[in-house]
Length: 548
Image (tube, rainbow, N blue to C red; front, side):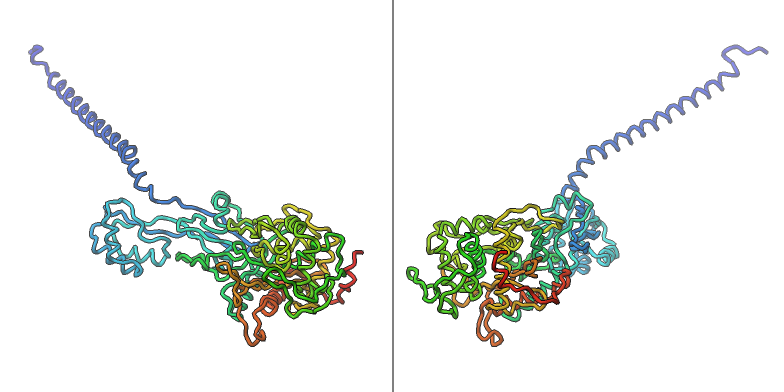
């Protein structure tokens, strides 16, 4: 029988389909809603909570990568090694007592109570230990302490430890340069992949450091400095200041250890200044190496008397004044030239202006404002003017560099950065002969090194303390160069308060301590620098005093 609409057999199926569609729609809607909520949550985490995460890591320093520092031969002076540092998120720590106890066992140098106080902090990030060794890292991992994490870092390493302490300076715990070359070239070292090449020769540095250390021990000196310079380019081949420190250690060096005597001290040069006074005399053109001055009697200057140590008590030529280190003769030369002319000459050759290298620590020269006749006389033999060793060797090298002054540098250079004429080539020629004669015939025979034609001059100056000169506390120095046939390298050695001994026959003057120290240094570094010992007979230095 025919069924009416109210009894349509398809109505049940239709309702089932409709209900199915509704359920699918509801399921999809719920899914989409959940998905939308997930997106919102992710957005919240990334945007809102992300800002909190940024704040969380504000105290975490970025990894500072630094390029290597190498010597002139490519040997590594400073490099960076990958390390890890340990930090804690206090809010993740579950058991403070357990965590503090375990960490104290791993790190005996950390106080358990202090660790617990740190972990109790409301801060979200706390450094616990920087630059861990792989062994320590594994020990921490073995403890299984939640809330501890590792951060990849780099540690600056100096393979030769204190050998170049005052040149290299060092970095802080975050790998930022804080002293020396590391500080001066901080930005360059962080931005360049190429190594920074210094003028230093590590083999020479080792020899100089070793000999200076031995000298301090032998003469019971409280400190010392030594510097080797390539005359033609101004390159500093070696720079040593003792005492020194190990830049690998986190402990702060003492003021004495941190002090760079080569660049930061102001030392009266003593009789070494007679080199400059002699150059002044010859540069006038009116005084020759053979010009005679009366050195028979002491000079009375106000309350003071200028006399010679074991003087000759006769007329002396300019050559002999330098050779016998006559204070009287030097003062007579200064008076002959005049105080004003002496000051002008000293300024011309660079003694009155600061000398800089790439280190930020640099001492300005000290000299009297009023350059009187008395000042001229005392300055002629090295009292009343004070210079750093770097300053002294720079000007000395200029005098021997055919009269061309070049700025000192700690960077490897193929040629001089600049040149400034300070004396004539003829006077430079005469000075080379005078300084060699000073060693072969004068008071500096202990400076001679067979085959290397060393020339130079010592200087002893009483230390000035609280405005008074100390009779038993001297600065003793020797400035020299080799080979004087064609000077390639200058060497300056300075000892701070060396003591007299039976070996020095009771003397504590430079001729008995700084002079032989310089000779030992030259003997060791000559072959390292490729300077061949002269096997043939030396030239007649007396004849060289006459301008050809």
